[in-house]
Length: 119
Ligand SMILES: [Cu+2]
Image (cartoon, rainbow, N blue to C red):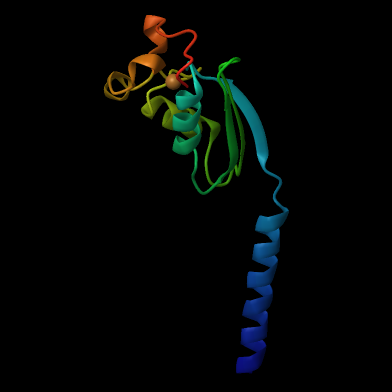
């Protein structure tokens, strides 16, 4: 009897895990303001979280491309994380404190450093 229950539980766990693996990640992209490779690093690091399969920031196009699990995180939450790191997104204005901490080169609002050979 015990064995049957254990086998049943294992079966349920197995099916559950297979379900997680089979879930295709959602793909999305959204606008986020930034200047350079340092912004790229900062944004991608902010999105290095469980539930986010991949995150790539393209500074030239000012676009974040993400692949994520909709069960774990929403696109809105992802955009909020980027705004908390100091970057304006489609949905959220950047956190002022975080923006104030950005190096001069990354202050996209001031139009500083359009070309930045040091990065
Ligand atoms: Cu930057």
